[in-house]
Length: 290
Image 1 (cartoon, rainbow, N blue to C red):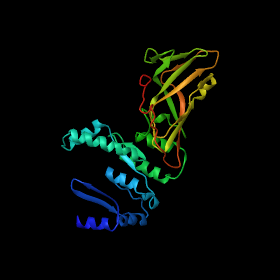
Image 2: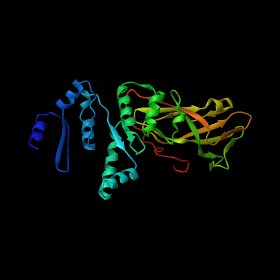
Image 3: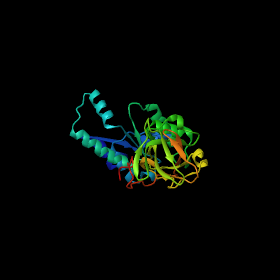
Image 4: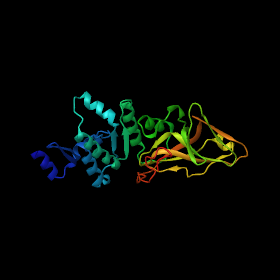
């Protein structure tokens, strides 16, 4: 404790934290040694340390970004039980507090049991290499991010193209004043000439704060006279369903089949993070919720 206070007083600590009566810290010297060895420092921090790192202008001296590793409650509960720990109200409260700190991190990776940790580290390294670059994401990065539960949920890796992803028509849609559902018996949306449909994708968006999305109709539907009327941009940090207002401008009926590729989305990395989307459509999954 005396040594820790001495380091702190001399300003030699990059970050510091206290947990259960014990002190933790990382010195500037230790960090610089890793950098001098030609390696990328990888720091495992408490949420308070992340808050300190993000809030004290450390970017003037170091280049870095922060990643929050999360998992669904049932996955976390299973891991605690395997370690013989009791799940109580304090743990639930701590999780809620921890997830509040996820908002200040650049990336949130859903660390479920079916996510390969090698993919997690590969993705982080890939993001680090391109941390100051902007542009459309290529196939490799789209695949890694989807595998780590980012960009899109309910996604199929076979739908990833060279620099885009083919969205699949979802089961729920809004047509002629009511919400309708496709199923095994009702497999088609029929659009009469001049008709419109508010369709949704099977996939759910889950964008980091430095990546935006843009989507448009498939060429096949466009050639049939269908147009997309709503704005195609998806804001950074948005999480929720993807909805398309489709108009049939042709003189013929147009049918959209359940599970077909109806739109294509591309992802654009910003040159730096921005404020995450916080509008009323955040976490909106279906047509019924306002």
